[in-house]
Image (cartoon, rainbow, N blue to C red; front, side, top):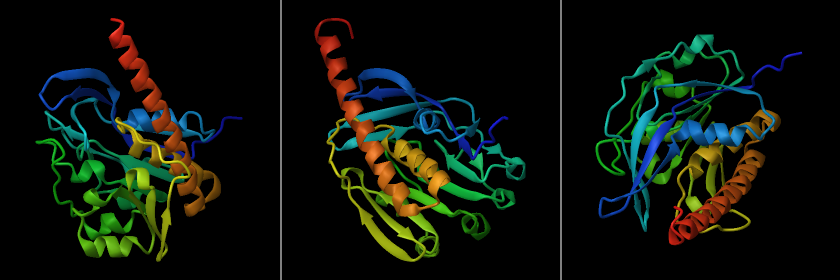
Length: 253
């Protein structure tokens, strides 16, 4: 008997071009939130389906203070027939506002939305813009996820309302601040992993959070699990970085 999908992923793959502060190209790699969401969920034993936009080109500036994205070519916004998505959970994570959310209220399950692509300006590295969707759209978001910087670009009254549902504020190596049904929690990682490359960490966290929630319906348990798995992801990123440096040193990179 075929298993039914529990989660639908609405996201986008990208070709990432990593650049240094002097403008030189460090390397090119697969990326976009869809890449990391897909990779994380494949090993979770949760059945999921994906709906994706056209693959995009993203330039990522690598600095000592973090990574900052820029999207050279603005995508055409794609209309989505949310009423035709029948899974209990829907995870939305865009690169640059490529999915039109106007009909979001026609989806009947729980919606998990990463705000990153809706507050990203795209024209300059790391630059943000204000995102103020209709109250009808925002009212249908069960779980909203973003960094503190990203969430500063959403009206405060929207965030106050969201705190009565689920609001995830990711804080890098400091873990995650959570508002769940009016209560506030701080969850710190058991082990702090310092990484020079955190690309995909936020997407990985969200994937594991939603996959765990699909199994348990428990917000705090899901956040703790996601933080643990993201720490493992960052450790693997560090190992890959060290391997890449070694290959470059011996002329194989």
